Length: 468
Image 1 (cartoon, helix red, strand yellow):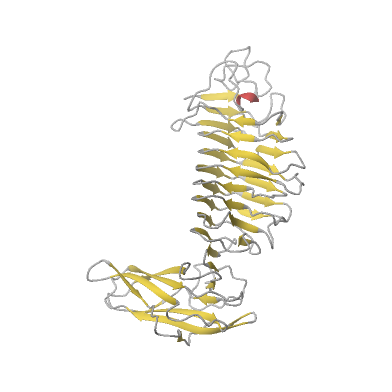
Image 2: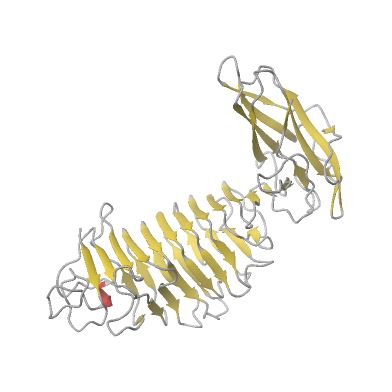
């Protein structure tokens, strides 16, 4: 494990051991050719597992570095191992003071870039390591291949020049890949810019996904095969293509499994979280928290969708966000594909702080007046709490197949209409048979099997359940 140095275009190739330009071939000093980055063995010295290669971000002559591929390239070192990664650090002024350039790999024709496992590709500053598609009519070209276990930081993948009808896409392949400050700039994308393959897990920290044109051919992200997942923390999806008719996540085929999660990611409310026109079957899930540069939440599963991404007209009751103005909020629920097999489950929780005692737990909902299938057997509460006498979890339910219609309510909702939809006040309530332990959590899950007959069959659920 050692620190190595590279100055592209220096007169002599040194042994890589010092940041200065070598005085003669093989002398102490930096390597002089960027091809070491693409797998060529250094002319002098060696590159071993665990090494950190500092790359001067401008040539010896002071120019940005541009590499135009004449064939597909594989970047990184095959010497890297799972315990000793090789790090490629494009310097932004820390090692070579005042030097903050750009390293660009241009990808003409059908040429692509593949990264290696156990290599860490890092630029000190944003958008300074660039993979650029220069074929303006590429047809279904996978510009980047990401194998198992590689890391990138401040990578910019620019596919904004592509204007071909079928476009191109970047593919994340297999297992554990983590990308920090990834910037994708995409025009046409006949297939998804990001695709998660079988049993893969892709993690993105603060990505900038820029869609320059509206393209409804494919979503931003596809959960392509069994067990694939993608988790996004922070970042944003933006641009002219981040608009109505464009989808965020696609599920490849019916029966597949996968999960996509967005935490604090800015996603325009006009974009569909699920790209598919019909809801696929299978154990997949899309969820988000704080996804509107606000506090919006969303969940999409094979039963339908629920969200708190208020358009300013969601009726509210008792729940308030912990922001500076106590913004009221509620869940809008659309069980468009619910059934006995695909029941919806929306959990909420509340801390029980009173002295140990039995309590009546009440959940309030507003139902569209067109809904005829919601009864005490098709919508109910599943409740768990900590029994004070035993210290063990206890479970109760309001489900009753023979009890008929839900109980009416007189709760003071902010409105009983949503656009042209008239809403009816309903509630579900039950008293615990034993005392709830003080300072423990009561989890209340709204469950149901009734299915919307149309897009007008929605309901609103107040997440601040009553404990009295």
